[in-house]
Image (tube, rainbow, N blue to C red; front, top):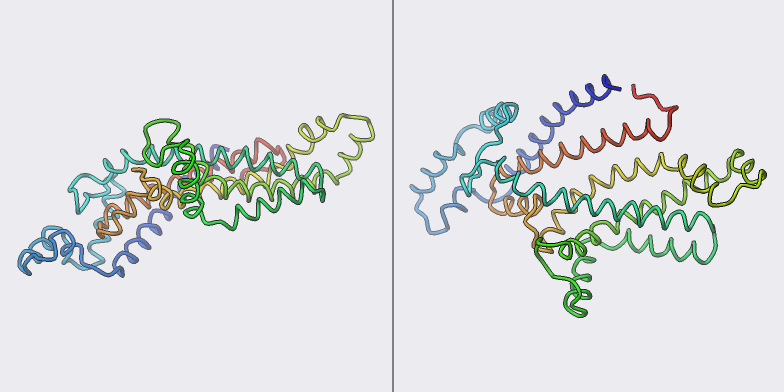
Length: 306
């Protein structure tokens, strides 16, 4: 297992190359000159050219990217073009907020999704099953930003139960975490139901029923453990979707996390901040997927990590 984990960590190197190169090329195609944005529309051409020279924007693209990637492997993500602060410092102040939001969101995804999926699987094709699956389909269909605005209007404006924005207490976490997690919960619910229905048709489940074991023991001790393997896969993928979703949700709820930082940096064409933010988010996603792969081995001893 240690060798497997080491090999997966080595695979992060091409991920760094790929992510930084794609973001670098995309940002070069975005309209607008960072020097003009930073200097202001009324700045003279001489001032803009001087600023471009100071920021190194007049050098060839391959030189800019080559210097950046060398600095990345030395732990230096550069300086923000706007604030002139180290990018890693800006990210470290925002990343814990995004990680906390993603953690509570994935918790809602797992608890709500698996509970709904098990309820549907226990009573397949019943009114309860159909109702749960309709709600799940609705959860998948609704965009997260629309659900966020709807939640703000209902729970903050009308009922005045929860705060609209900020990140000062647990009350501020409820709405954005629920908004971000409900879509993933719908997907997990459908996968849990499908996996559970496949498992309960197996011979060993019928044998357990014939021996007179209680339904609770059959479902939670025998069926659920074997049904978790594909569900874990979906949960791992949903964590990546949650990281992407924070870009919108943090903007909707005015949360100063990594996602909002990336959006603000794109608007000002702050290339080092965008590259650094996307790179860190990608590394978090890769590490989470490695953790999910290790969980496979825990839930199913027959799976070999090789």
